[in-house]
Length: 357
Image (cartoon, rainbow, N blue to C red; front, side, top):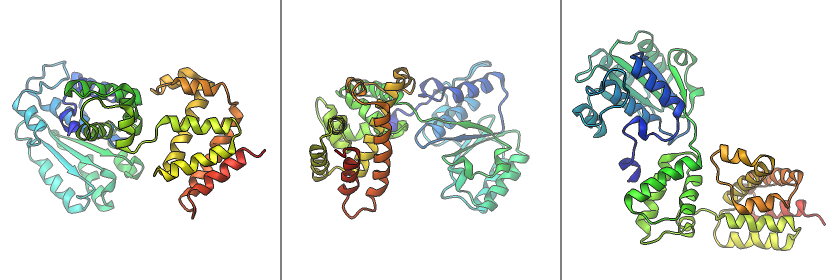
């Protein structure tokens, strides 16, 4: 799997999360390492990856004073890379959520690190711990051994006990932008000699919804199912994505008040097997993109999104208020598709509401 092969092993390889990387580098350079950290954010954004890099840097014997990068060549670094380090203990709290598991962790924490300076515990999905387990963890965090560093990771920080939150340094991981993801995918494609066009890479980046790991899984899937040049159309088909040209076509019918063709279009894509709830979700994203383009084109770039010529053209043809009305109507329609006996019906009613003449 490409996501394993290209998992960052040093700080310089980490995509995004500059604010987290900068702070961790500072701690390593100054030697002011905290005893407990909380990495929180969406899945696939690099929480456990960065925890592993930080653990390597803490114990790497070749890291010089005032520096931050692990050498990635010594036995300790290689043991972490190959998942056999005795100084890095990774625990899935979703399947080890009871008080007994945390008591075992406490006993292990009292034993000095066998190889390096620190023994690093990474508790993934820490919000899944039971209340009793959280209370047991709290006792360790209140009086941690000097040789122990805890890194808690979660996608749901609001479920972590406030008393635990008060004893950790919290870092919020953000979703990666499509631009950040597509640049990394392009580098991987070049290294692996995968011949794929930039539009296909960008489509995967958007579909990944901020998760680098998901994008790398998509690229693996595409590579195994295609030979030779891979087009953006092949990416859409293989991953079950909806081409943006469909959104452009549908919006064209709405702008021109062509309700017959708009309704026929919905029937056509439904017959082709496209999930109407997903289509509506993507169409709402398309409308949002056009609205932002009208208000502030530079904002799209700051979001890391790729403006396109069709969006720019359509932005000139529809007023802001009409766009806002479309967004409101289709937001309601999407919420009704799941419970409708006829999936097309909420969209057909939305079309008739928007085109009343």
